[in-house]
Each structure stands twice: as structure tokens, then as C-alpha cells.
Amino acid sequence: MSLEISGLEVSYGAVPAVRGISLAVPGGKTVTILGANGAGKTSVLRAVMGLCRSRGSVRFLGREITGLAVHARSALGIQLVPEGRLVFSNLTVEENLLAGAYNNRRDSASVAREMAKMLQMFPILGHRLQQKAGTLSGGEQQMLALARGLMARPKLLMLDEPTMGLAPIIVEQLSEALLAIRRTGVTILLVEQNARLALDISDYAYFLQLGEVVLQGPSGEMKEDPRIRRVYLGI
Image 1 (cartoon, rainbow, N blue to C red):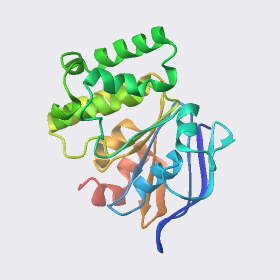
Image 2 (cartoon, helix red, strand yellow):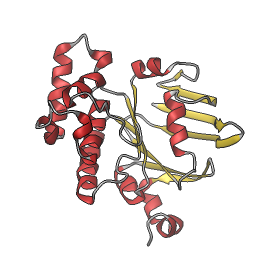
Image 3 (cartoon, one colour):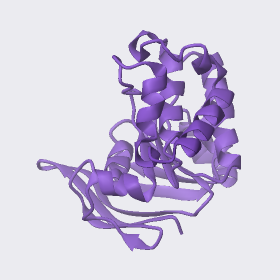
Image 4 (cartoon, rainbow, N blue to C red):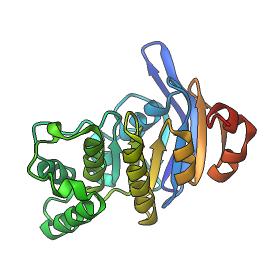
């Protein structure tokens, strides 16, 4: 198992955001976490990355990582592409991509290979290499954020609302990219409000409500569940 979470609790002050949930992400699979705003989805990703205080157990590749700092988790192969993209606005596209490869910076040949892969996956970035990231469109910034995360050659890639606020044509391009990444065997933990897209590209789904898992199962089965179709798919 790539990622195992058990009894995870996250609170902000006196307000509980995640209430003792457990979930698992098998290696090479894509797992999605769905739920309304405030359900605790982002808090789960932040806890795995070490960006917030939490209680419970987080194991990665069989190792307990709950006490590790963010940089140590990144060095183990965990990467988070946060909501809102958060590219380095004053750096060029190329500099952003190289920043993603920081942990592998001593292997210049490997960095060059990963750069070539990213520019093949997102050709528009190849035309913007010397452009400041802050001048890109929202869709281009999301592509850059995703490519920057992949430059680290992650063993676990976590994505927080990658399609939020993007035009349908960009959403389609990103979904194709995610499917391509999935085919390479990268393990993905996805938080996404577009339930239809998330269920289409994932293997397994967890549904959160007020910080608790209320439903889970294979994504194909979830798409046929009347409750999911009514509440999340609008069918």
C-alpha cells in the first residue's frame, strides 16, 4: 500500500475539520476524495504533506511519517499541487519547472529528461519557457503547477482542485493529462469538486461529509449509486 491513513484528526482551533478518518491509496492507483466545501478534503491532503498539525497515523510506503517535516516528506516522494496553483509568479516557466526538480538537481541528465517529458505533455509551456509565470492564463498556470509537481518524479502526487475555475476546454486537456499520468503508474490522491471527472479518472472514491467518511467504493460502482448520481452528478 502506498499511503495508509488511520484515525486522522485535524482541527483548527476548537473547530474539527477531519474526524478520525481512515483511507488507503494503493500503489499505482488513483483515489479521489469527494465532498462539499468544508467537508475536510483539503485538510486531509495538508495533513499528509505535513502542512498542518494532526493526530492519528499516516504511513507512506510502510513508514510512519506523522512526525516528519514537509521537506522530509517531499524527499520521500510526496508532492502536493495545491488549490489555487501557487506558481512562483516572478520566476519564468523554466525556473518554476527547475524548482520542482530541486530534490533531483544533482542529476542534470534526469532533470533534462523530465523537462522534455513535461514539455511534451504540455506543449504550450514550451512556448512560454522564458515568460514570467504570473503572466500566464489560469489554465496555463495550472498546467505549470502540475508539471512542476511531476518534475520531482513523485511516488505520490496529491492534487487539490486542479480544475477549479477553468474553462471547459482546459478542464478537458487537464483530464487527458491526468489520465496520461495515471498510465505511467504514478500514485495519485485527488481532491476534485467535478465529481463526474474525478470518478471517470479514478479507481476508488471516498466521500467526506463534515470531516467523516460517509461512503466509499470503486469509482465505477459509485457512478451508478443513486445517492451519488442525485447529489454529486445531478442525474
